[in-house]
Length: 213
Length: 231
Image (cartoon, rainbow over all chains, first blue to last red):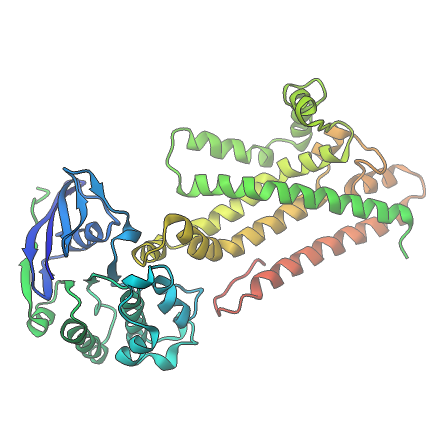
């Protein structure tokens, strides 16, 4: 597994960028708020277009400004775990989980619903509506939904921020198991040093590139 | 219970209103989408144009329709040549007047519901492999459905009550353009027409009430425990 991310973007008076290549299983993007960590994830996911750069995951070029390549979001196969979870409120847990699974080619799937339920312990939640889930349950469903879409890479944007201490530990354990057992590479964004110390992996500091002043 | 004349008036009113709403709905949705999500020059002007029938006296709207869609009007003449479509003194003209008057209400209701759809959910759908079109069908459209139903309901009620634009555009012709409000107005002009007025007024209230209840039930039928309401 390898990835190479080189992106630059100017948003208002802020310059946001990352230039990093790695084959580590987990890379933690660490830096103060406003440094553009989420914007970097959005650029990898295809939700935000970089001004310049090149993004390659496992030899597949997702974006290359010089070669004029810009794969649309839905064809990047990049799983995104959001800070604010974003389960679809009008679909039950089962339909949420299978949303991406049903959209991708069978050959691109590498995990099935039963395995995900067992792995995350969410089998008993399948018939619930998202609003009937606790914070930890909702985040586990969101992780399951991303895994079922057969991602090559997982993006995690402060996935613990909406959880209490006990739930944090539970989700951290899940993330460690995704890294070690499923071996999906993870790009992990946080501003919390403790999470990085626990998860290990490669640490990339995202500084505030240009001070507005 | 109801006389043949009353049934005729009711059926004509329903036909005019249903056709007006059915034809306006896609137009209203497109306009609402453009106003909610679009970024283009002249958006403010478009917004104002859509809302014009809400603020202009209905009689003026009817007169403008008469100029544009009359048999010698620029639009009316072409529609008659190309499609054999005639609006003057026909129920189709009443439907057109109702549609134009209902449009701003429908656009407003639908636009609000599109604005209320969380774009972050659409982003999540895209990262899961949904094309923009599939994302629209599976996320945006179902989440904005209450507003679409509310918009259709408002449009239907507005069409059912349409008076000023209709009477100045297509006149008051029994069996062709004499919808409920026009029939009530006509009955008011006739000595001893009070009974007729009362009966038609009651029918109007019942029809509008039934439309309200029906639209609320349509939205509530979705059992996903979210608070969806038209009322």
